[in-house]
Each structure stands twice: as C-alpha cells, then as structure tokens.
Image (tube, rainbow, N blue to C red; front, top):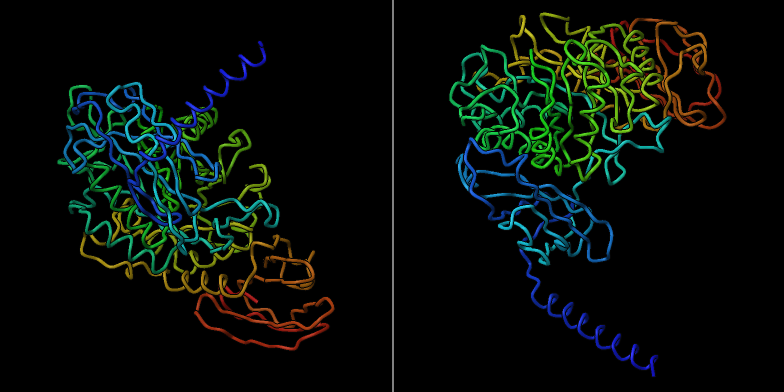
Length: 527
C-alpha cells in the first residue's frame, strides 16, 4: 500500500510539473531575431536612475541564455542605458547577446536584486538564423606553439593594427561625432585588422567639455574613472566605434586605462564595459596603458580576473606596459601579451616577440607600438619592424605621428577633415597583410633563425618561419646573393615579394632539390 501511495503521489506531481512546463512553452514569445554571431540588444524596464545614482554597483542584473539543445549556456550581465535614447536619466536596462549556434535561444533565467527587472522576459526566446560571419577571435591552441589567433569558424586572418588614442573625444579641438567616428573605422578597415583606442582619460587638449565618460557622486560629468558611467557618452561615441567595427569586421581594442591615468580599479566601470561590449565578436580589452608607470603586476592581474569574471565569452584581453612582457603578469585570464617596442629592425622585432612568447607562458604576442611614422620612426622602420614582428611569430601595430601627442595616433583623421592616406606606411602594411593571408599558412609555422633552417647560409640578421617539410618563409631586410634553400623532398612553389615596394619579384613552380636565389635590396622582403 505504501508503494502504491507514493507512486500515485509522484505521478500526480509529475503531471502537474509537465502541465506547468507545457503552459510555459505555450506562453514563450519570440522577442528578437538575429543571425549566428549577430549581436542582439534586448531592453528591459527597471528602476529609475539618474546621474547621481550608481546602478553599476547597486543593481545586479543578468540573463542566462540557453540554446534549445541544452548547450551552450551563457550568463550575460546587463547594464543601465539611461532612457535608451541617449538621455542620462531613465529606467532602461539592456542586455547584449551574441548567439554562437542557430536555432532558438531561451532566456532561461532573468535575475536581478530589483523586483522591477527580476523575471522580466524570462522564458521568451530569440530566433537565430545562419550567417557567414566568422565569429569571435580565439587563441588557436592547435596552431604552432599556440602562438596564433583564429576566428570561431577556423579562419586565420593576419592582424596588423593601428592606433587612434583620443579620436572619440575632441581631437585637437575638433568635435568628434558618431559620423566622424564611423568614418575613421571605415577608413581603418580598408587597411588594418585592428584599431586600438582609449574609452576614457583623454589628454587635456583633446577633452570634450560637453560630453565625458563618467558622472561624479553629485551627477556632474567627469573624465576621471568612476563607477557611474555616462550612457550618453558610451552610446554616441564608443557604441559608434564598436558597432561600425562589427559591421566592417575590424577589431576594436578598447583601452580601459587612459593616458596619464593608467590605473583602473572601479568595479562598476569594469562590470559596465564587460556588459556593454563583451558580447561583440570584434571587441578586445586592454586593461592598462603603460600600466607599469603607476601600478603593479599584481594589480593588473587582479583587474584582469575581475573583468574576466563578468565576461560570458573568452574575448581577447591583455595589458600594455612600456617594455616587454614580464612573467609576473602571467595569468590564465590573459589571452596574449602586449609590448611597447618601437623597433625598426627585422631581427630585433622578431626576437623581441619570441622573448615575450617565452615569458608569457606560450601565448600569442603583439607589439602594439611597433613604430609610429613619419616623425618618430621612418616609414621604412615601420614596414621592416612589423614584418619582423610577423617573423617573430606575432603581430604588430602602427600609428600616424607628426609630433608629440599629435597626428592620427591620437586624433584619428575624420574629425579634423583628414584622410587616413596621410599615414605613409598604410599601403605597404596592407600589401604585407594581404600577401601573408593569401599565400602563407603562418598559423602552422614556428619562428627559427636561418642557421637552424633550410636557409643555412642566409644572413644572420634575417629570420625564418617554418612548417617543417611543408612551408618556409624567409624574412630579409638587405640584399644577399646565392642564398641556398635545401628543400625537402617533393615539388615546391616559390614566391618572392618586396614588401617595401609592393611588388612580386618572382613566382617559380616545379622546384625541387637545392634552390638558390637572391634577396632584394629592400628593408622588408619575403621569400
């Protein structure tokens, strides 16, 4: 009898739960449509907030998204967005989500410590269709030594970056607008894969007196880092850059520590940046700019852990010092290392990134200040240096500099009515990137010195990338005759490009055995 009693009660409870689940299914509503790796923005009605309030700390709000198959599941933090239209008072909270699979994504749980938000839209779903978008940037653990990035779809674009530190503000006294910001992003996308810039802390000469990133406790606008973020600034300036970057598939590397005020330590700001931008496949984060001038390595590691804790996706993250990478920075939260190294010599640039790779626990490496031309470095230096960074198994970044804190590297171009073509090295850097992407399986290659490669008699100042038995590339910065390539068995195809002068020198097919060639009198060439 006992068995019968408990069986009957359990069956009744099961029927009730099934009925409740079925009713919830019937009531679920489609609230948005997007495509795979699209970024969908959902609006919620929450508690009224003003500039003197502190929703980044006081309002805990997140949504758990679950794919209809049961996996994956993402916990996405929400953020306050004023009135949702650029106003700085209101009750609009938002969540930005990037689906990684097609099908239905359910808002499995909508959590908040405020009753106005808790449960809102819970059980509803987003319908996601197919797309050709390549997805997030990820460390390719299967690449040679784990030193290269890939996209979610397995593609391996090569990254050459650019710099516009203060272009979101009032560069050189010229007002930035959403239009000028989008124009700069569009111009950069024609030449580069990445653009790095500050989201706070502009230099005094570039301060916009009418629009600043933060509020102080009285509700007054300020450039000083604060837990109270100004939704109008981030909507009009940073959103414009990131959204256009997404459309153009240009990495937006957001520098959180600003010039002259490198240390970030405000939890509300960190949480806000993760919530507002952490779901964009084109967003990277740089925690500090020249961090070692004002902070400790342990501080940077702590901030990295805090930022990573609010991110649902493993978007690329690092920090930028005034020299190379130190092992005291090492943490699983970083995806790559950054160095500031204005290096115009091919072998020196390559060796610097090899050193960083050995110090950072064998992760991708970036020289984010490889060279600024035309006034700090020559155009030749920039082209040779970034070619060298490639041969060090990493990536390089440039900037247009016409004087101290002057030029595109601080101002951008569009707000001043200029064009990116004023930056002398961009055509050659585009040529370099395109030849790498079109012809070189670099993600399968490891940097070696010539004496340890098939180019045994090559100049010791040259550098080599090797996928042994399959593919080799020799980087040269001077003329040398009778360079011998001791080719492994098989039939080989040989290209040579003069990067500095943007021309293919030769393309030979049907090659086998020992092959002899000359390198050109060029600061940057690849054979």
